[in-house]
Amino acid sequence: MPVATLSCGICALHADQVQLDAMEIWRHPDWLLRHHPQPSPLLGWCCLDARRHLSGPIDFTAEEAQAWGLVVQRASQLVQELTRCDRVYAIAFGEGARHLHLHLIPRHGEDSQTTAWAVADHYRAVEAGERPAAESAAVQAWIHLARERVQAPDWWPLSADRSGRAPSPSPRR
Image 1 (cartoon, rainbow, N blue to C red):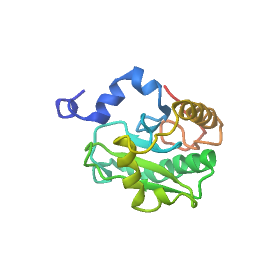
Image 2 (cartoon, rainbow, N blue to C red):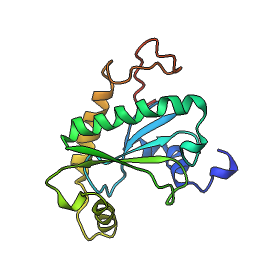
Image 3 (cartoon, helix red, strand yellow):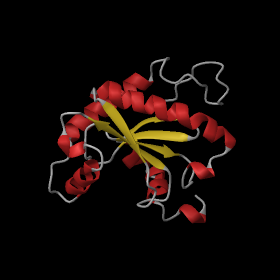
């Protein structure tokens, strides 16, 4: 790991295979999709990480920029399909960890605690122990379903070499 990334929490997570095994759903040469670690604010709250250390889209290579939209779309569709939410918020600030990790947050219309910016208050309340986190067993079951779903040949339409010639889902390693 390059010296510049030794203190990065996302790089450290990616290097900790034991911790990552519990939450990883799918990986691609450039991207890693995982469930939010425990305590998870919501069931299905995922993070889409750049595999290499970069601060955001401004640092993408041309290939990463080309693939990003499809990756975000597929990951968002997965969250919506498995949570049956009304929409999926996609949020990346890059302040807590200056390594691109896009939060994909299921938004259920009837849940006023997760509407618009209230979702940040919900996040902080769960982190502080003021609201309950998503149940660990439910999160693990959700991750299992998500891993099964990304195995389907229709989930990822581009091959690992980005050619687009043949479907090649690349679940976890």
